[in-house]
Length: 165
Image 1 (cartoon, rainbow, N blue to C red):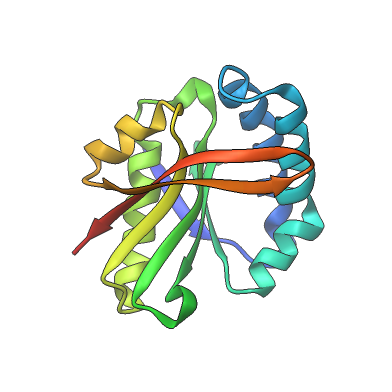
Image 2: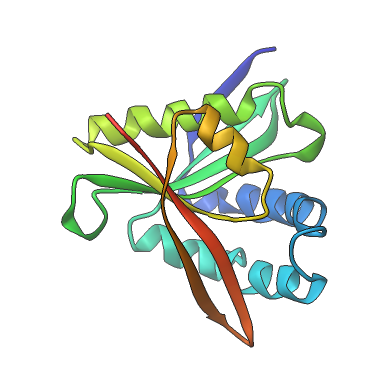
């Protein structure tokens, strides 16, 4: 299986928007309510929200398999002027989970982070998300637990996981 990863520009954010709307409902339906999924897609994955994220320093990588976009990562190196990188988003189409695409994406993010002189990578992940096991397998550890109010009566009950190098 050949997977290629490319950093995208603002005009290509439609790929991330489209993939999010295919991935989120299936991956999160057993973890959070449909109302929260819709709210988060509308507030965090709308094209204006994605453009704003990119304007504020978030970068996006898209994974392709057989010339089809199949996953993406959003990350921000040197967040808050610290030598750490935040992985904001890492998603792969559900029918392709377990074939190595997520691993290729996270390794690409790590390479970008190292090139920016970051010494660690961290992320937030829902405590009930099966991806926790994937992140542990990639060498991450739970740094802390946190609950974030995201508005509209919704919260994110997350682990903050980290990897150092």
